[in-house]
Amino acid sequence: MLALFALPHVRDFTHGPKSAAVFINALERGDRELLIIERSGRPFGHLAIVIVDGWLMEVRVIAFEEQRTGAGRFAMEWLLIHAFENLGLHRIFLEVVKSNFGAQALYASVGFFKEGCYRDGYRLTTAPITISYRLDYSTRMLCERLNVRMASKFV
Image (cartoon, rainbow, N blue to C red):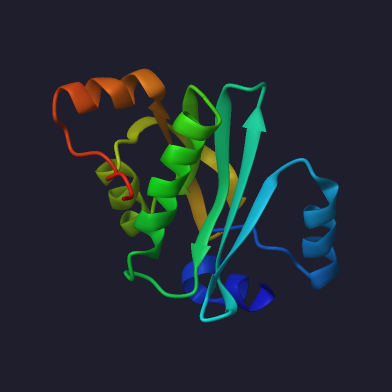
């Protein structure tokens, strides 16, 4: 997993673990769901989510070895189903650095909308401005009623 966080398209936009011990500690702490996505039997991506007070999911990390492969869309669609249908949550929240245009387009395409902007919110020298996005269950239901494109259901 350390190799994933060392990739330029991941490193410049996330706070990755500094060592294997830090990553193992995060796995053992149990205060968040850490998912390792595999492809062909080896790690390909990583998701870190936190459930807050039984109604909110915070997406802390979404990172993949390769960009523009559909893995990010798959992960976001899975997160929507996991949060709203499996866990019965009401809102998903995430932050993205202002310069990560691909991620912003992905989040908007599955129904997220911009909620705000933070100066030094993510504490990265390479990305001083972050944008917060959210998707509420009620927003998702309204979009479906209005036939606005949302994440597709898996068959």
